[in-house]
Image 1: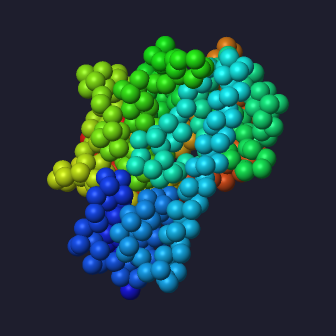
Image 2: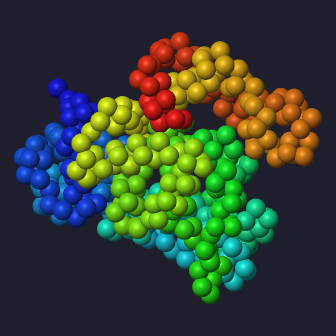
Image 3: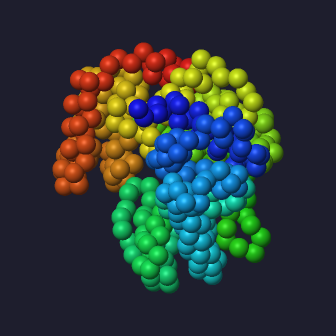
Length: 390
């Protein structure tokens, strides 16, 4: 009989805690690591892209049998993470060099900035390299990457441009905004002024966010994914590391979170990170939050996303209407022409439906609407959203 998610998480958590806090693996955990449990831990950690962190702790503890298949899987996850880090680090150095030479201002985002705070930078994996540039530099920066570094353009959205390197297949995303309006509470009110708050790095065109703003951005990114069905375990590891590696001006930090409407969400997430990786006792709220996070996978699932948005929209009828007719405040981010010509909104609604059909996204939307029939009112999610003030 297989192990439940709760049982696997109970064993996985102290392994992760051992790795990120550089402390010995507890005997109580080690004694429960049967071959079956180790396999379950690997599958679980792989699903959340944290297998390399678990591998670091288990290999340091000499817990794994050298002749086991599971040991091979853990070692492979570690080697892959190291390779990914080296490839991404190389591309970041190349981009920094050409942007500095061409006077393009830039800010490293997400994992590209976060990994320096981990015990080993390769522990903090990411799918791509995320870099913020000024909106007015978008075309020039894109041309520089394709001409100077031979990157291949792979896609555009209203918020970023995607590239891929030809040899190493590393994904690069150039962002010209950090979060769209009407997402993650009022986060855009704070993050729209990022360049005014950013600090220049001497003798380069690189900028960094003040620690308080970087923390806020991390919370806003978590909230955005949370509303989309789940944010995974890794952001909570990031959160614990930020709170234990950086020294914040708490007044400034709290002011930003309150301005962006994310103070309650931040407090709950920070508390859960301390329950997991520190010594805080769980509460009813952290229990609800943990259940939601562990049930959603790394990037969330449709069931959770529908349940959240249905509650936020005030019921399933409102939800269906908003999915079919995107509000102007969000539609203008998808089609920037509406920012100057609002009268084109009906035309762009039709354009959106065409784009959804052409890209296959319409099938997903229909699937979401169908799932409404099987998604209950979910009192727990409603209570969770109320307590988080989302």
